Length: 470
Image (cartoon, rainbow, N blue to C red; front, side, top):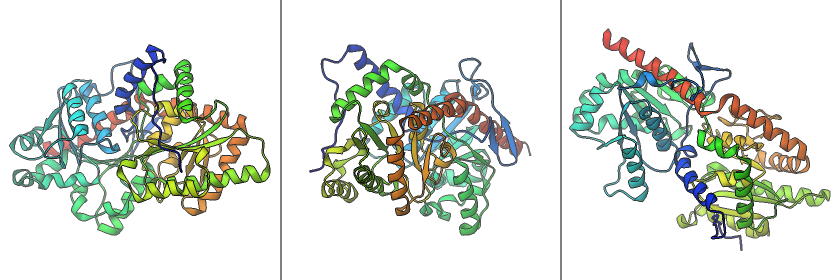
């Protein structure tokens, strides 16, 4: 049978400081890992359609670039409150704004009647940080919307919030000029007029990568006959908490030892990991096919290499999905149970990034809108093997910080060859990892993110003010 999914257990013999460290890490990564979306450009300027917004100094050496948001009222509207990328990204924005004294209110459209444990926990985190959590409809949320200096709609489907309440619906023309629409999706089924019919009238759209922005521009025009508003392209930045772990040699060594011990792999073994929620669009099935092919290549060429392992982080057997069963059946059929490891989905990815040797970002079709795990892996000096699609192409420099290959079945053999290539050439693997880290330090840090989002908010607020003064 395929190996059972693992979760790293820290024994009683572990040093006290490590336990404390992981507790701290589990809290910080809730905001630091799954939170998705924000900021970068091809150089040290924010790309805006027709504009260039210069970046400021790093946080910590000067006041936050978001200080102009002090005392302003911002309403954040999320389609749901869960551990998925979109809501957590919006939470990160909420906390950045709260840190400079912004009054922040939160509305969840698809709010459960009876909050589950996750919703309850996330709402309390926001309340603890001073974020006001409101009902999705009713007089209170309507009043806040009308008074707000800025409204941020999060994800393509959030626009339907404006039609949930009769009073709110009547005031849509007054709300649109102060709306920033933050879009993370690339799938075709989001291009419905019911979802985005108000998009042309908002103050601006913020999208996670250039390729996604171009896709939305073309699809909305060709399929829906509408025009995108002024569009800001922003990339992610790694949190300071994650960078502290990535740059702590002792912490990484301890994490690496314990994770590998829990998986039953040796210190010298090579680990290739895919860290994503398990779904067909994330490409775990094609990754395992490539891994199996790479094992065969090593055997056929009689290469003398450490044992290679595939690690699939993001498993969820409690869901009993057909796709999850397919993955495990493939592993069993190919008799590679001893070198394939399924790990439960987790918020604390840093231990796994410390333990592996190469990250595989195998998202299919149009790829990731951005893919934060990619820059997190690069922070840990890991080379990245990724599909040549979506935001991955804006992060990974092919041949320098990793290797890109085609999506779909056409990419199975190239990925297999890339796995063997990095397993064989140790120096190249390490050099790619170091260059990836340098690239993160140059453009994918939290202060880059804060400066870029400041540029977006200033532009949107100015546009809103001009409209109200007209």
